[in-house]
Amino acid sequence: MKRATVLTLALLAGLTVSIGMGVAQAASETPGDPCAVPESVYTVDGALPRAWERLKRGGALPILVLNSASSRPDTAYPVLLEKELAARLPDRKVSVTVRNAPGATAQEMLPILNRELAASSASLLVWQVGTADAMRNIGPDSFGEALGRGIAAAQGRGADVILMDMQYSPQTAQLITFQPYLDYMEWVSQDSDVVHFPRFEMMRHWFEDGRVGFSPDSKEEKLQAYQFVHRCLGRILADTVSTMIDRAGRPAP
Figure 1 (cartoon, rainbow, N blue to C red):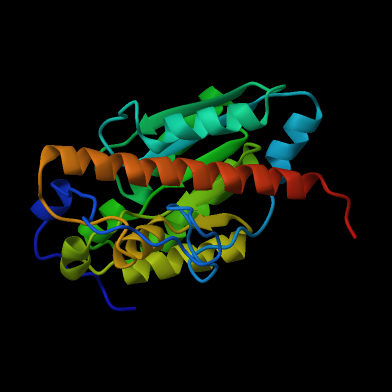
Figure 2 (cartoon, helix red, strand yellow; figure 1 turned 30 degrees about the vertical axis):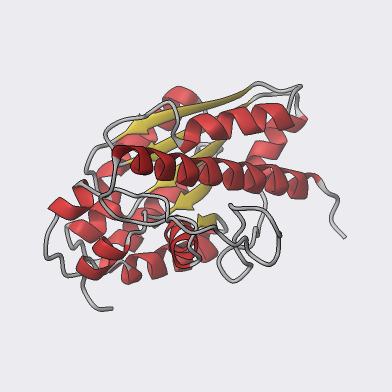
């Protein structure tokens, strides 16, 4: 595959989003829902058998979010994910723990992944990965190999895995070749029977549909856009988890 070419890293570090001024049109599948994305962007597929088994035994739903960011604002999607799932599973304790590995590639996150899973005993890992690999032009083959090792390690420790890819903005998409890494995440997720959560394509759809814009405007607009994106990510991810847990508990046909 073509190796990624990075013209500058500064723009990604300073990525900002702002709400477009026009009235957004919801996706046709769910009229009136600003978070909706068409099936061509995302369809929930698969199950979470390890999480389901723990819940079936009366256990909790501990979730570990591992990412390469440097902070965890109280309005970020993991907080909203926890609230959404707690409301849907009122008889179970739902907890979401976030661990940051600022600027780390998939390979560099592996020891952190193992350590944090051992400490948290999570039954679900949301692995937010790919940005640093693309920025640093890591070979896609090496990236894919690291993903496979991380997934195997998580499953070996009793955790299901959801792979979440990078954010989208039209500015950085012109400067950094993300596609090889997106392709590898899709291939590895299918090969390892885990979920690829396409944050990149979701954000691109919202942008192209006029629901959110990506430009350095006012602080208020940036905040509105941040809240929109994370609210939608948290809700769609909660839909994904609850749907897959329900699917895992259904008897085989």
